[in-house]
Structure formats: C-alpha cells, structure tokens
Image 1 (cartoon, rainbow, N blue to C red):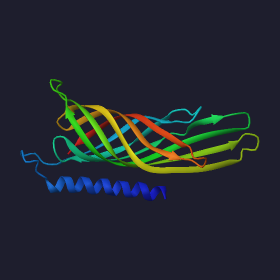
Image 2: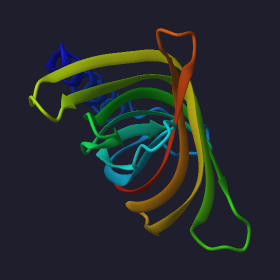
Image 3: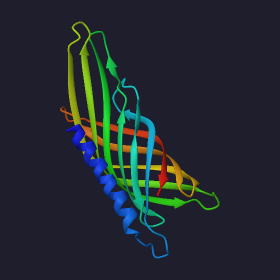
Image 4: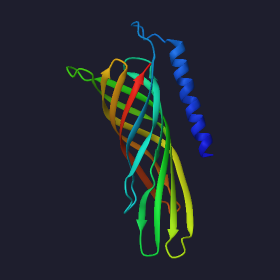
Length: 196
C-alpha cells in the first residue's frame, strides 16, 4: 500500500506539472501559470516523550496560478529514530507524510527576491513504530496514521528567475492513538526548487 500512495502522489504531481505547462493560464497581466519542482530536507518532530527528532527528506512541486496564489503537493519520509528505551525494550519510529496545499506568497517590499510563504491544506501523516524486546530480539511493528488539516509558514528567496530556496515551519495532522490521546507532529524544512 505504501508503494501505491507514492505512485499516486507522483502521478498527481506529474499531471499538475503537465497541465500547468500546457495550459498557459493567463493571470490577466500577460503572465502564465508557473510550475515548479524541488527537493527538501529537514527535521521531523514527533511529540513523544524521549523520542529523538528524525531527519526528513522528500520532494515537492506545484504551480503558481497568480503572482500570489498556487497549489503544492509534497511527499516527505524520515530516518528511523529512537522513540524510547528502557532495560527491557527499545522503540524506533519513522514517518511518511503526503499533502496537498493551497499556497500564498507575499513579496517583501525593498527586500529584493525575499518573500513570505504560507500554505494550508490536507495531509496524511503515517508513523511506524518498531518495538524490540532486548533479551529475545523479538520485534513488533505498529502502524498508525491520520489525515487532516496541515500547513506551514516560512520565508523564501528567489535566487534567480527560475530557482528559489525556502525555509519553513510545518505542522502535520495529529494522530489519534488507542487510549484517546493524540500525538502531534511538526517539523522544519529547507527546500530548493526550479521553475519551468
């Protein structure tokens, strides 16, 4: 199922780029839709006591349909990180997030190329926890996920007319667990993308 979700995200992103490149939607001021594709790296923070922050990495892409507004898709995955350890067992977690967001950019006056960016949308946050009993090396895997509102705020810089870098704080959907509690997740990312 994990492969199916990744394949669907890649197909949806590819379709968005193709439609953006071929449609040449006019802003009304002579500009057209501008698709972009990029990669990002960062840190994913699962709000669990004693859990380490994971390294996150992934791809994103979208299109700006006006100078200020656009649509963006993103896939991130993480490294395996420690989720807690005691004398009996050790836990590790990893996560995957898939999201589709509406974006808004604001060019900061008198800051040539610098812009603020916000995004708000819908995402799936999947976490896999692997517990290992130290004495027997018996492993147990638990998969939990949830979908909901997600978003981010950050700053970007247009390095050239066709390339930008962005630093963002992101929040992902909380995941409900069996005892009625929920686990919050957030992260920071640094991305770079090229515009077509």
